[in-house]
Image (cartoon, rainbow, N blue to C red; front, side, top):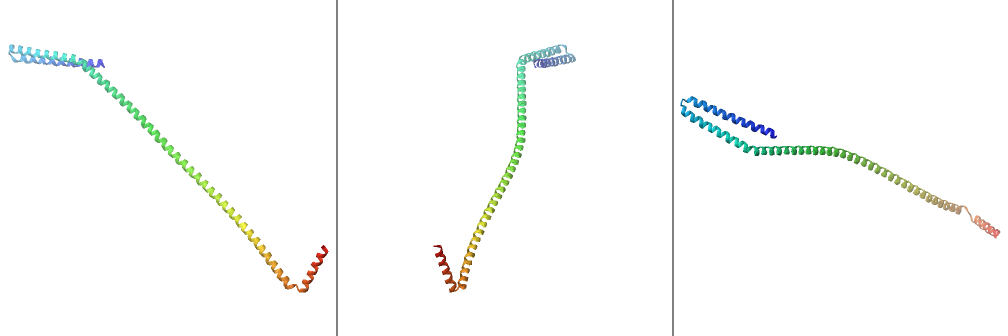
Length: 200
């Protein structure tokens, strides 16, 4: 950096000297073209003093301002390098964040798909479980209804048998009443009495 700056200052000084020399030669040419030797010598001296004055002032300014200018340019360069490094770091950080967010987004898409699949599977399992429970409940209700119907049928059969037996006894009694005469009745009573006497 310092070498490049010295080269630039050397180039500026060389350019200034060249410009001064051109002015001096122009002054000499101007003085020689006039024809008045006395006036041209004064003009040439004045011009040379002015060129020397310019060169001294320029050299002094270059000497005095070279160090602060070099320091300012160096600081500016360091600041630009630091800013560029910070910008590169910020860019790398932003790219890393973008990559991280893209990765998270891809993961979230995958997680959402997995959650949807799990929810569908859970829904199917719950539906199958609910259908199985409903089927078991229906089977239980059918079984209980059949048992209840069987009990009712058996009770009705018993009642029918009992009623039929009563009716048969009643019909038999009625028939016996109609068919048994007083003589049959007296004979049955005597037979029963004889059986009781034999047993005693």
